Amino acid sequence: MNPILEEAIKKLSVVVNVSTGLAHPLDDSRAKELFKALKKYNVPLSGADVYSLAVSNAWPERHAKQLAELAEKLGRGGRVQIREQRGWGEPTVKRIIAELD
Image 1 (cartoon, rainbow, N blue to C red):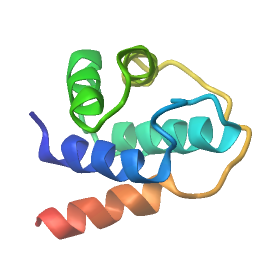
Image 2: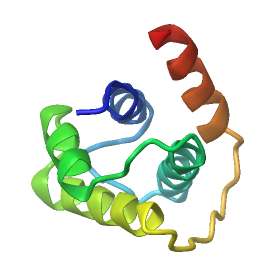
Image 3: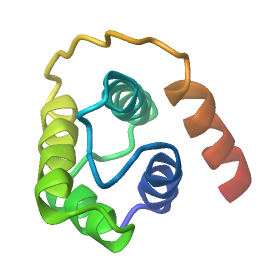
């Protein structure tokens, strides 16, 4: 499994209320920003990997499935609307990459 993806899901799991998944607009936006940044840095976005990582980071199964579907969509080049842009995704991915080097 990709270590950048592993760290990204860990960081997302800290800032998102995993018990409600992506129900809150800020949580939804953070996930979208993160996956877009991961895609930009050529990190593979496998739905199965994201699901597994989410479950191992205490996401309930249904919310982990939703997160995995979002990752898969963006990984295939799908488009999403980010309502609450926070500029969180790209700096987070850059920091993860720097920490792992």
